[in-house]
Image (cartoon, rainbow, N blue to C red; front, side, top):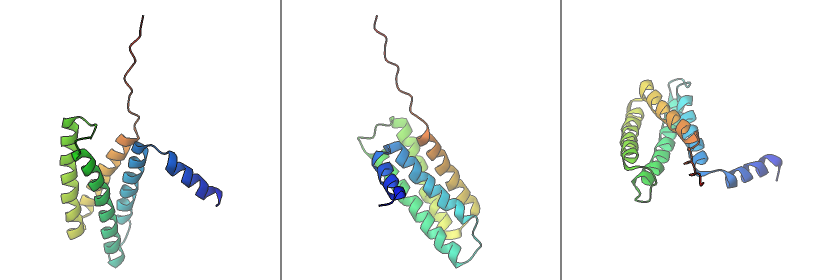
Length: 131
């Protein structure tokens, strides 16, 4: 096993859940961004299908977590995120049907914002000082 493979294996075993989620949604965003660089034609259509399906799978996992009664997020945050996931699904279908660049950019923006949020450290509550 070479050093790169060893590093990748250790990284996968030690990465936190939030970091992993941020990386996966960033990968989805990168695939969508790549679409905007491709010329029209069969390659772009194939890449569009692949990128949108990957993005939808990622959002399906998030949505399942947000719908779970064990989700640690506040109810209003969950409701907002579930609403956003509905928008992502609807917009994804529009991208598949029409390939509209403005819809792709909308999905990219949402994915990038979510990745940034997941990459931001969660503030820990301050411990009360005992006297």
